[in-house]
Length: 202
Length: 202
Image (tube, rainbow over all chains, first blue to last red):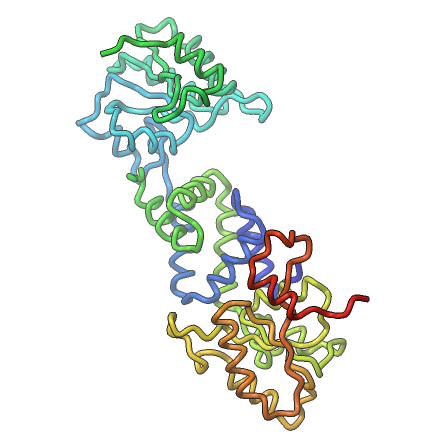
């Protein structure tokens, strides 16, 4: 496509680098910005620049944070004996949204994936081991909340192998049929696991 | 949703002001930027700032332009006797993409829409009349390429009324069944117009 302006072309090229945004959507967004006030574009770009340059990560759980220690790690209301291991910050947000968990977290920053060249040393696994081994550690249970995929299982298996000598209870989140789902549409592996992992009715 | 950082929250709020982008997509984009290098965020925001602050509009056709007169208006290869009236810059891009048109353009910057409070004076209609009335005007045909909607028809009707005294041929783009479409799925109005507007087979 020929753009009427180099400025448009450059903006479209940059916007379409974002995930899930193609050239057509990028053009629509660029034309939208031209129609809006200059101030609204500057508010957007300032927010993005601030986000990228000022964002920090909690030095305990490695979650996104505004301070050196995040709100969850520094809260006195959280159960420090329960540690949930997740892949990314967005998983913390998803779990927080359920209001079903009151422990603390550990964000690995990814998942073991030989295909994408991500090994255990690229993740915050040593940091996890150090947290669990620390003399002042209160952690009694580690919940592995990783994606139910091949990579998630590999990562969970690796972490379990590294920590199985420690006096800890290691659990994984339940796998089964999704709430509101129809049994008939559940795939065999999910249904099989939900039968194998059946719990007492109460 | 609770965000782990005020920076994330502000970025999500700003990104989700863009058309077609909700809070969830905005969060995905913000987390993507955090993962990428600082330089890539700065390239993006610089492109957007440049776009918004440096963009100009051709003083003849009002299309988006890098210079005072756009590439189409200043080209010697374009047919200056043929003028196509469109709603927005993106319509110019769409028509240019077809490679079927070699005339010049006039971008109205919108369409007459009483519901949205857009009247003829909010658009570049006076500017169009002035162009057509200019002593050195070479324009012999005006093609009205407006959307086939109520607003588009109103705008076309208004423009036609204003210019019908001039020695010009006024045409509209053909309305009919889309190429590749199935007759059975065309709506009655479109099909009706395509029958009424039938042309010689050759």
